[in-house]
Length: 178
Image (cartoon, rainbow, N blue to C red; front, side):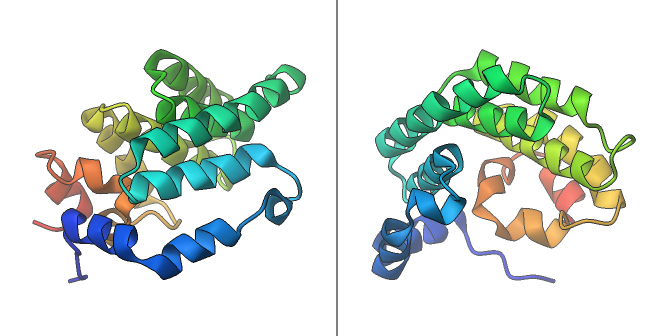
């Protein structure tokens, strides 16, 4: 049985952890080869983990300024659409997030790409989680637990990305924490 740190403790640790804040502050767009969309998505996620929704939204909006231009150039790039979907979700744009995430999943399903397809479905599940659709998130994650990959019950129980799912009735069965 793996250790599950309660979400309140995780948030408190990340909020008070100056080393975490210092490491995040040291990251620059150059760390992502100039991909400012990925840079701002990381900062949005870090802000969410620290319990700073205004900063999360601001960084998501900054990510979208870059990512939306990229989508215009590459409208069928499933990985890009998945990132845009996460940015929309973090920016509070539920309909746009769902549309982008679902399109990404339709373009690159695991049945067609066993390597990248699961990644896209994880991003779709993350979008569902961020827009308060926990049942859909769990439904999307369930088939991924039966194939080789990094998504596991332990991952779902320990990664703060999935914290909002932990109170859903189906979580314990899916994550094996019953």
